[in-house]
Image (cartoon, rainbow, N blue to C red):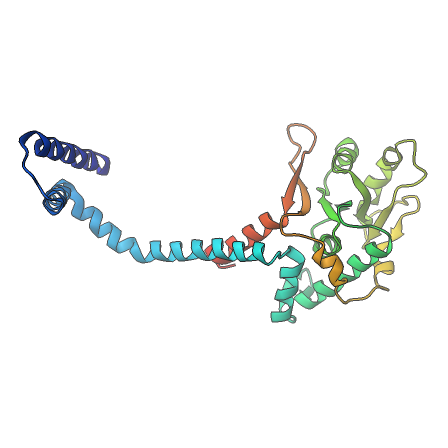
Amino acid sequence: MIGSRYAALLGLGVALLAADIKLELGLSLLNKISVMGTGWLLTGGMETLILVIRTLPRDLRAVKKMVQLVVGTKLAEMRNLTVPKMFYNTVQRCPDKVLFYYKDEQWTFQQVEEYSNRVAHYFLAEGFSKGDTVAVFMENRPEFVCTWLGLAKMGAIPALINYNLRAESLHHSILVAGCKAVVFSSSLSGAVSDIFTLLLNGARQTYPTYHTGSGGNVVSVPESKNLDELSREQSVTPVPRKVQDSINFKDKLMFIYTSGTTGLPKAAVIKHARYILASRGLTSIIGV
């Protein structure tokens, strides 16, 4: 119905313009606006006007939030912010606020910050550097977030692999992202052990793997290191400023994967910029 009203209004405008030109009426702009306004009301425009007035507060709030989102993201780019830097800023504001509720555990922002810092320092000490990809093959639990965040803090690119993958799909996911090492939950050790010879690819003597957590049927993976024990010895302070500043707003943050239901999983790049935009969107639009 609204479409027919606007069509009628458009027809009125065209007729008015044609009459003014052909009959040389000499109508002023104000006259034309008055006639068009009258035509708009006659075609049911008042209903539309009332609707606009009623929804105006909501629409203005939406516009405000969109402006905040765009401006906030642009400022993040100008300041060369990254996900680790933004997380650190949040930790400074609310260190003791609970970030994760997991079973009977509660993890505060400060605990996640310290855990991820230890992971970052450990992988720096292991010789990993910016741009190295490390597969993270873990269940959904706080340590999973701490691990990928710690890798991101020192410039590595975590490849977040679905913990349900096995055999060829698992090997492919590690291979396609060019992973130089694998961090896995001890409960998933059997899946890693099954593909370990494939990871060696016949030319390597070993392939770096790191296990974390406990539980499940633990299967030995050759020369795998206990990340929990080794990272516990590392500093809880942030990585050096030089390392932090080497990571840029538009750099890769992580790899995520398609489900693999129609073939082998495919890796997709998530950059710091995209992650920050999405997180700001949740904050600005939804209020999370």
